[in-house]
Length: 146
Image (cartoon, rainbow, N blue to C red; front, side, top):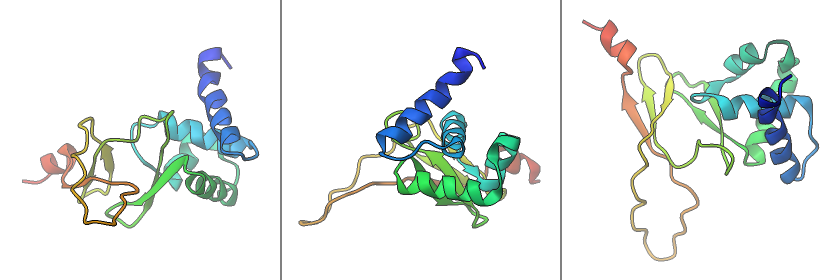
């Protein structure tokens, strides 16, 4: 493995250690993949992308669930009610942007545009996070319709 290929794994391992957890091959591989992904991935997409490195399905589900509970990944449901996972945190560029959800194919796209400012909340409310999801049809699905 070259230094440039090892860098995502090294960074993922460091993030897992910083979260105070044991570094496992499954956690490292999954987090490195999510951080390099163009958009949120399903369990099956992660499994296919990692190939034999994914291990068995239970291990992969546990790694994904742990990454979510540790705050290193986010889990969202797409239009087909399938969970999709994406990297979060300071080392990921997956924060502070909106998503576009295609209602035809269920894919989720990360948009480069920053999300709008949070609305003013009533007294006593504290905002923990804000998610912006736009819904419609992706270019491929829109082109496929007459």
